Image (cartoon, rainbow, N blue to C red; front, top):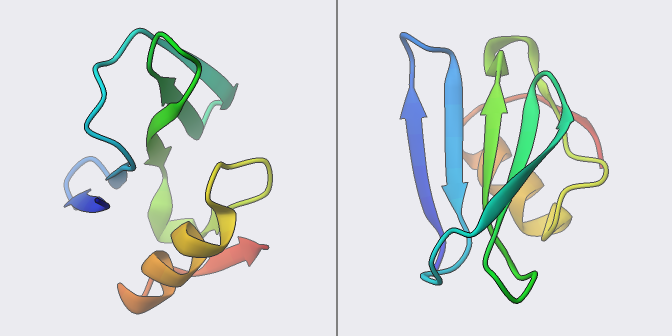
Length: 79
């Protein structure tokens, strides 16, 4: 179950990876955040400033996310 939401006004994308409930989040850097379930499963990825491209290094499901971004014409900076 992968959901993709793009907010053009905010220049942001949220990719939901799981239906599990949110427990906590971790910022990788100012443009990338990973949300987790209580058991440590990554459940979502928030990406900001996407018009300049997205660095997918260190993201869960890196290949899936890179493919999804490419399909939506978002430049992938690293994979």
